[in-house]
Length: 216
Image (cartoon, rainbow, N blue to C red; front, side, top):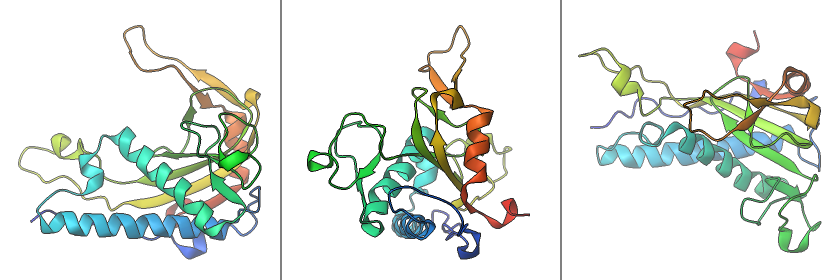
């Protein structure tokens, strides 16, 4: 049977910062509920996959695709609990969450109002497509990757890492809080912008959630 010993872990309720300031009526409790909903979803999916001897979802998808899925799920869930925010219904619209009723049919291609949400496996050096003024929220998590089994020593099983949220942080960033991420001459990846140290410091001063090991 496929491994089912690494069920996703709910975020620690004591890890949420009651003093975190979020815009548009959003609260740390709304974020907690959306995170819990993702854990319920991933637990259900992985248990069903295990009955068919199929690996866990996070070990099948490419890392970037899985990170995108985490972010999109939370974006869709937050408005269930925060009635003043809506998912931006414009395809690839910016930002991801916008104030309810501010734009026709809650659709806008680009605005400075709202919250941009990104999910990442990294605790800093977060990336975006462009340097821009935006209220940015980053959701940091850890889990196994599809490549883990390939990297395990021959004859040794890959280390099982249950999915867990590590941190959520957010703040209003300005264009000056970004820097372009370089790439090698042979790289084909899209040029992106990274959150500079000034932006990172703003976000860490307004952390929303930290897992127990990050609160030490």
